Image (cartoon, rainbow, N blue to C red; front, side, top):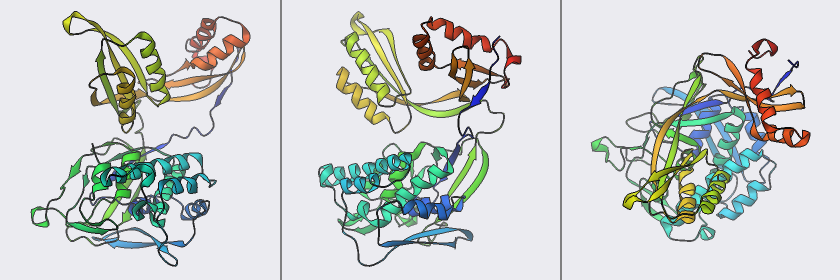
Length: 418
């Protein structure tokens, strides 16, 4: 068999997972403070924030106690007068004009778009008409972009969170006096498990705003699922301190950061399954729909032959995606098929650990997947596009490349990963 050298993909250190324990709610400053408390370097954060063309503020970070627990408190102080409110397009231009990492830009803009869509809906205006202090204020920009910077540097790839308490009472805003939770907050938390919504204090609630619109938007964008703490090897704990002292609970946000537990060969994650049955859609339309769904980020798309009412043969469309993608993908299915309804469910899936690797083949470097099986053994699986490229460039049968990759698993002594 041909000698082979395994060259691991750059930075194979597995990404972290994190759990947000929102027992006292969440705000943008608490989220960022918790990540700092968990190990995000303040100097790096400040240097990255300087890449934004944003002036007139300073960040104050200190240690404070809430309910006997000490954590990190972060506050954005304005230098000078109150700045003019910014619209979504101005904020996007501000972020895009920076030299921040592409991932930070993308995540920051996505969070602001969520906020703007929520505000536009509750106030009955178009998206391009949304100009308000809550999103355009300097502290909101620093909090959101700062959180995205911290997540990027801490290499957190998965977020989970507890159900969220919302508080009760009223707050003052630029739109007047609003009930707690604020209308935009409620809009952003659709589909999120909530606790104690609008309960007065005498019934166990807290007459304070516990979740801000900024905190809700960050949750909606980053969190995959809400519930108990997932299995992990705990590595870091951070406490983000809120601005106020609450009478019945410590005003803190706790973040737990860790990795998949050693010996856990199959990771468990929650995904969303969209399903609908159709009997009047052409094969051409289905093919086009599948392309659109994958382009939009679907994890998997399947068409299953079924028997429908009135003895009609039909097709069940199954689409798998991460939580948070279902709205956009459902819109695609409605538009392309004309179906009248889509079933939406959350399911667990178990996935084997895998990494990309580059091996030396008879035809040069070849990218493959290196998979860890439940018993701890490893095998190589072909990457379709890489094998296709070799077959086309070398004028050899595609199956020959696949068979060569498969042969690696029959000769464990010939490669060092076994």
